[in-house]
Length: 214
Image (cartoon, rainbow, N blue to C red):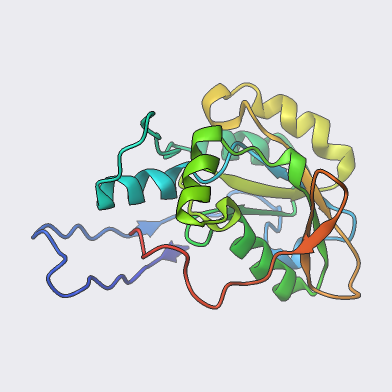
């Protein structure tokens, strides 16, 4: 198993250093961790707060200064992910939340599976400073890129064990929590319920909120 990614640098924006990498791996589990494995009533876990990486990068890129320095969430996730996989948990899907953030990834999965996805807004953590900057820049943190965040789809019966495993990795999984669930196949919409109980649709953006980060 290998992967490849092609990136385009704007004319005159490169700084003279270009690093090219590739990866080759081996599938070591019998689990079918793929969108096709997502089932109705699956629960969705998120491993931490969102939006920090995208906001940290745009602040550095544009020279924006705030009262506090927002730190990227960039971190290694391999040990946590492998611990979950090797635990025997019935994991259906895992996805990282990079470009386009949580909302974009969930829309892609909903479209691929033709399943509804319903989120609880109060369960999705956003640091106060990140939220404040998003309000100033008129950005929605649900669509802001992350580098150390991922979601996991699995049956509700597996949730407690998965969270207990994640707690063994305080930085990467200490905040893992349930943020939503999968509905039926009546539509492929992603919705989020706010604090007063009113839901809104999270649609796929036609463009990007932020310039490409990497």
